[in-house]
Length: 502
Image 1 (spheres, rainbow, N blue to C red):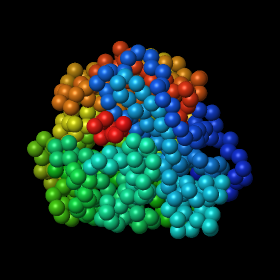
Image 2: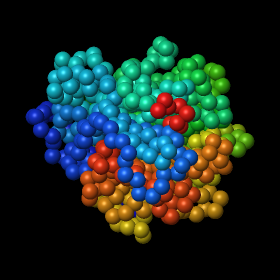
Image 3: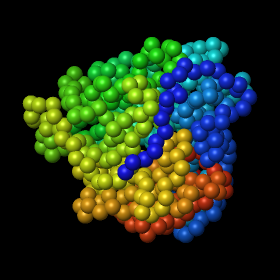
Image 4: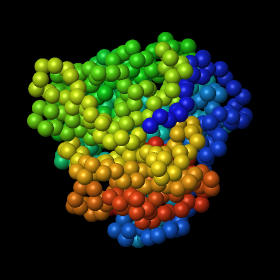
């Protein structure tokens, strides 16, 4: 399925300052993608249908919502300030809260009443008055682990958040044990042990090949840090976790520090470099024994489902695209290249063989992104997969925006029946990342609810939709209607009511 994704050719130019008194007239700041910037609460949201009585908890997700007009005309949506959206669900009722993450960047710019930090991750484009200050936007995802809620951005350390009020409690370094300047937005939690495995790249704030691994026990204590070197200085956005390994896909989305110093885009796509898979044993000292496997072609892993082992065979399930994120970063070899959509693939590595070969097989035929599984079964083979997608047979695709063409559907793939099922959000409507919530703590895999934010673009408004996770085409069980729009987001999660005070 061919899609018309935008290119990032304008980003190859050295950035030049702009008049900061107004917003740029670009797709990032226009129409439904425009900043919202609204902090507040709305109690007793309107509900169409019935919220399942057993649902007790909070849907919390992160977004990039610029608080001030940017310093540069071609600023990316990735550069927005972290804004948290929370829907507290209990007793069939729902309340909405929205609140910025109070980063040092946000505080300094609010005091100045204008943007002072420049292009995405590029300190050389900042106003001199903020030299040495923390540039984190804390805008990508959230994780709840060991009783602590963290807002995450892979270019910085975590920010600790009160899960009840969304108040920012400050930067978080795991009681001084985190020495790196960076921490992934996609840590993985082993449901068998409760251990969280995370990592950081560009750990000193500049481009290098060092990757640090962090092992955090079920109580939230960072117990071990290990280090290895990637083949080249690449964006490492996600990872995979199996029972015995941590797996990294190193893609040719490269950072060249000399280009960054010139004010150019922080990353660029260079498909002259190979895509490499690093397999790190999870045992103590395992980073010393990292093994590298070369993919057949230079491709990019966008986000991951799961990894699992069958004897010596290691299976990696993730979304793969044949280009980089060209809607955000340029292709230096072909500036006019069009970004291609991701497809789900299973990569299999025979760890017992002497060769570095990777076997690749498609998982299904529809495009997709924002993967989700029943996380209680992570690190073992799973049956159920959910994802954002389009299905022209159900309704027309929407015009592309700042992030490329928006989804119109959520998809569910059953690996046993090999059947696809779809929820179509409706004309002018776009669902975002699906979040799975089990019906009960001990429910069988995939028995539960799927939640997604849905943008009602023609109404300039947002809903939270609840679906039966295995019956998407039956339509919503409940639609929780927001009276306003919240900004398009990235990643979220469900925090159970037992972890909340109210």
